[in-house]
Length: 283
Image (cartoon, rainbow, N blue to C red; front, top):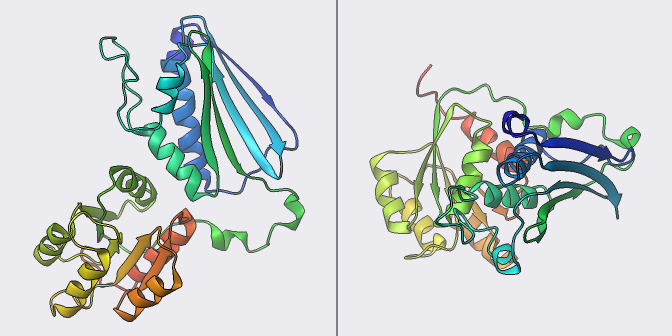
């Protein structure tokens, strides 16, 4: 890391031999670890230390990134995973944590993992990423390649995401970053979404069920009753996992219903299936 080298920060590691393989999307795991390493350098002291360690615990791999930096009080720690939080350092030259930690935590959850932190003010912090372990590599399916995100062959597509949660929107941007040919429009209310979708017809709609004005179900019914939007595939992405709710949405015309946390592979597989069938906009 350039900043660490420039500031004389020593980086060391202690990686357990039985904790080297995790179940997850390689690009997303790298994104999380890069963010943790970047923060460990940014919030460290000159000539400080960063230590990366891994261990196997209850069929999960824990990767800890520890620094000797500013550390945090319990109050700051409780507000850590909030977008753009300055952690009480508004008058300092130090940047806020941005949305990176929030996205990293959500990406970890999407892969069935967690991201947590420990810290002591004035002594430093540890961030622990926990992901399901690959216990016996020899037993991994031979067709594992089918589970990877791979590359999609279709050309430019437009996805419209109706979601009022900023973190979920940024996580979706990160996921769709693996599909550079996909453009994402966003609406934060149902009625704004309906107007925007009518004005610029997308190839697929991603829809949350909890919106600040109308419900996702109501918006779905509006979309399916309008001749100009009725044929656009709608994929529900919601934390609501009640079978009755899922059945109601499918009966109302939803193409698929994905419950949060959604795996990156599952989401991209569904989008690829839908978008591959759409006539190409631009060759």
